[in-house]
Length: 217
Figure (cartoon, rainbow, N blue to C red):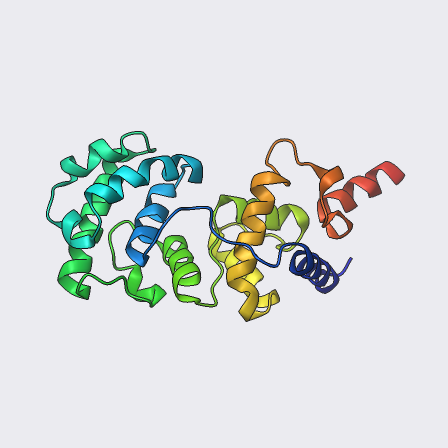
């Protein structure tokens, strides 16, 4: 199957069956989303959502978080993976927001990456979700699912995956397509036991295509 056909089929199916796809993280402002995405690295959204209510109640603004030390943030996020590093990053991020950006999260994804704890994926998530930037964040779900179903070929890094997806998905759909792939990977195309019989995009899946060829060989 040509990749253009695969992309067209996958995009058309998701557009018809999942027209609204959003982040499962809970937030009410750019600052809260940025904090939640930083915490979500190598951690489930469910765990992050269990943690952030008390954190945001104690630190409702960048200014309130910037005023304390990492040790003061740690107790609120100790159930999250890598809490020591993340407490340091949250502290540094909040202080830079206050000192360099007047307490406002910058809407430019390149500028956002100046903040401690904010890499390309995090900046792209906040840029896409909060500011409507036409970017493709690549997390572990997006990286794995796009390779398995054949949207990417030979991509060895998240950046290579991002470039291939961005080159083949219409720009205005990139922020939504990011959530399509995440949610599909989280609930259907799971890492160990993918639910292929329940998968709506199975007609365009490269993995299933290869399995059928092997059976018919």
